[in-house]
Length: 178
Image (tube, rainbow, N blue to C red):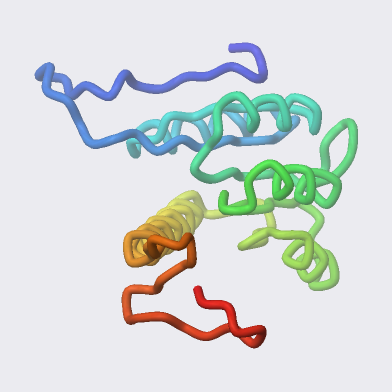
């Protein structure tokens, strides 16, 4: 399959019943065998997987597919994950990003986290460990979305257009209410 492609199930169980919503993962790695191994592993665990082999293809796939999480190889032909992290964060700061590298150092890991990576692993990475981390990141993301949805549900406007919090009116320093 060419890079930038998308593979994954159709959301239906073998018996024809609908399964729970698929989780979408973007894998960015210029090593075709590495992409294939990650893709196969995560597809077997119910993920819909998109892949890319360059920064440019990664940005295009991220914009088109809107993944739930992304796994980024550090070294790519047209740059590094440090170049890619801020671009993806600018598109959607809520998507968890994990960086993998064959040439890791503590300084590089710190730099990657500062640029927006949630986790940083050196290769070879144990796939089961990576899967646990991805699942936890997605659980945390869902929890944040629930909290945000609850906060939005608890906000209302008064007849005069002022914000009213569920617990009552809250004074702002300039005397306005929210």
